[in-house]
Length: 443
Image (tube, rainbow, N blue to C red; front, side, top):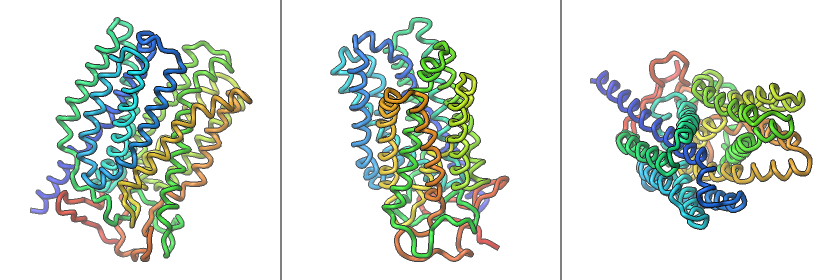
């Protein structure tokens, strides 16, 4: 009978993973489809860059304002329900955006775009933690990879649609309708058993016993841990936004390349990050969370610094690719660590870390622009390199936290065994509904 139960659990988890993959992919596709048709939308509304910038700022502010409420909603109603509702609303608002007749209407719709996008960001990462716990091994990096793949697919489809003369409203509406149909069909397969407020484990992909992470006998203050994880997210998102927005400008304006060659900087960063995330779960399973983040951040910071010092187009393009590779596991591991904190409302903690991280998205492009104007774009791009090194220094925060508030660390013989590469399944299989956790005991 246990064999049939195990088979049913594995099948349920695979369906849940497919459903959540579709959510991450759709999120990337929708954002990317909107971004690649933005020039045509600007022409249609006769908008200038200043008014468009204000609309984007309103969107980010709305997302930030929504995240605390999203964390409460995840805790109250579960990440499954919030994910299903927010992704459909995100599809809906994305399909309406190209229809905006004027900049004020567009800015209003962008507020809703940011609201639903912010709610989706919190909910789907909370659901990813639930899925990873059910699998008993790292899976979040692969989910984030599908977001990146969605963006790449959106860019290719958008370029093709523009080339054959498909109107932005028609193109984006078709993408949104298909996306809504996919996530609605698969959404029922997401896991119900959140368990985000109950005590957790030391964390999937936790570092090997004996690696000091600072989780001492007396535990750490929850607020300090959440702030540390938020600081990592802030550094990551600021760096990602800086490279997204300024890599092409650096290659074109500072190094004198053509616009087509300049686009390769962003392409190298995005593609290498997506590919790296596809293999990121295996890396985390082998090295552990702390080492994966620390080594990756050091590679990212060092690679970008060397590329800026060489000051040649090929070196810069390679450096942006190396930066994407080094940073690829940072966000997934940070969310995984947040979702495994003990003695704290983990739904709200995920919302807080996401909120702090998204502040980096808001600050990053403007900061690079101001420093670039004052010094140079090359000098400004030292900022993401320095932030990568800051992530390396903060990497202990993503380690296994046995206790956050009070109590003592569980004895070694009661801790769940760390998943090893080659295992058919992880050590933890969560029984949906019964909240039963089967753990292998250490021998």
